[in-house]
Length: 237
Ligand code: ADP
Ligand code: ADP
Image (cartoon, rainbow, N blue to C red; front, side, top):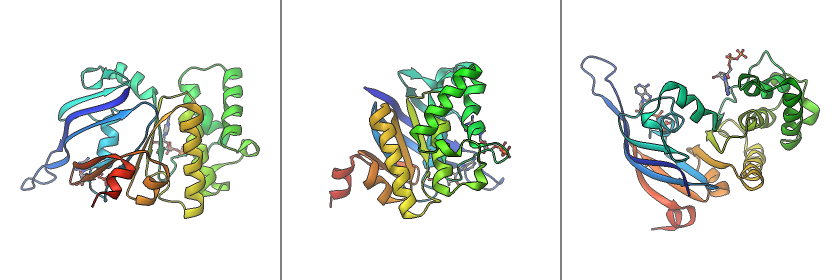
């Protein structure tokens, strides 16, 4: 079953200067992400990957085309309905985006507080998430006291807190060394296998795709120039 579908989606930004040309950041993209996939989106800087993520996460409207998330056409929703869609999508980032003034526990609790969970439920859920990402002993630490890999594990715990069906990882290992990258990718694989979360991995690193993804779309100049099973796409001449 398809969980994210893009049909002929384009996103155009207006010219930056009066004489400038408009930028077609995403150009007539169609793709289908199946429930349970680890779906990679790979391309060089400027290819349109981040724009695609913001479209899927409904942070920006598409200029044309249709996007469905979990069967719902998000191009036709109100802001209030979009917030519900966003609640079903977890995000992790290259720079982790943790609140530096809050403890690990408070960072993970944050989306649960926003969602109106009770204090005892939050306590229980945060403890469970900390165990899952292997940071049970770091609840009271602050982000600056953690390694990059530990920070990203906090980011993953926070992204999973409310139980989203989809996790979007935007260059999530690009700030990490190769050893730590593999540890984080192992954790993402467990998130996929043990919790059934569909994972979308945006990266410029081929190695990341080959380690974790089952399907891949290759982006260039806003277009998807190739997509399919990782093995087929990267073994074709
Ligand atoms: P990637 O994530 O693959 O590096 P982006 O989606 O960030 O690619 O960018 C795709 C293209 O769209 C680039 O040419 C970029 O300069 C342009 N772009 C991205 N965001 C904006 C924006 N808010 N306004 C204008 N142009 C943008
Ligand atoms: P600090 O208080 O430590 O300066 P900021 O307010 O600058 O933290 O926010 C840190 C980052 O967390 C920001 O980049 C913001 O986009 C991100 N952020 C805010 N709310 C959420 C959330 N619910 N889930 C994930 N990231 C979030």
